[in-house]
Figure 1: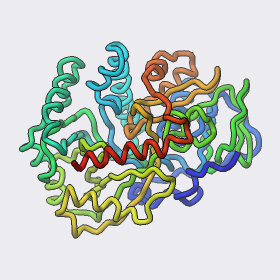
Figure 2: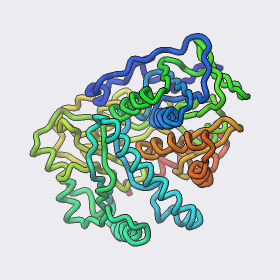
Figure 3: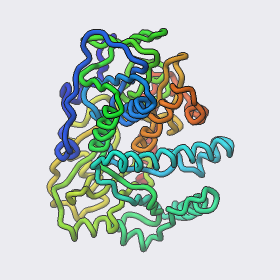
Figure 4: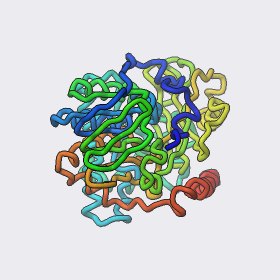
Length: 436
């Protein structure tokens, strides 16, 4: 099998991208490369939140686990994303209730909340230095969405007993976010944000302490299904009783069924120079993270060293834009024109994975082969929870895994071959609609 193009087209082999996260990381792990033949109970392919959480939870259950990553632990979307730890599924709970039966909607909500709680628990238990801060603002870029935000907060308060979210009026929103481009929205103090690369590396250290072996620079070229399955790399091969695909947007052709349901897209973030305390308080008064109501979402927050971290813009080809800083800066200045003179110190891209329904894609690909992916931009919590659910399923308790497996995740029209141009066309329309 040819090398996975997405793993190499935008990045240097075995190197973290030049992001603010990589520049402020709290100690890089230096791990071995798979060499020769090894055997284990579970082979995990992918060293992001899903794979690391799976390795940790399997190790704690006594399984012999080997994790393989083509580059470095946390190298992909897990170490590059906006760091927002959200509430619920990527699809809002009121929309999810319209799509599935009430019992499934409630079970999916409970699982997402357990995933969010798991993130906080792992940070505390393993003392992961990832600067977790509580608070997430959803800001409406159109006034007509305000009533929906009021109803949404009431739904979670009353029907789901979730008291951490409340409606925010337009006047309060302007005070909280410090710009005139938004109307009302919500404030969720049960959600929050963190340094995702430090969080990923903390999960890696915890997995190692639990007995898992983590291999870097060990790109998987193919998997021979069977009992045992055999996972091949350029330098070695790994026999395993079980295989977990935890590759998300980087799965390539390793498992074609995932590619029919999960599409890689690129997203981009910039980091300004450090700003004054007064400036950051004017930008986001309560140090929450912010995402808005656009279909092509803007998301932003202030870092622990007072930089504005601003994410936005999506692309559907393989290559990142040549000028990421300029690409994202334009969107940032539409929200915060006051930052026009702020120097942009970092600009980076990453590849995440979306599904047609924006719900996660969990699947069995054989009696001993499982996958979890397609978090659609909500992977910090959901992927961490997915790893725990994969470990449960391997251990014979698949109740939660099967709940997510039941959520609708239809394949892309035309399968993998046509998913990108068709979705790009659709999302171009939604981006235009955001501006109208």
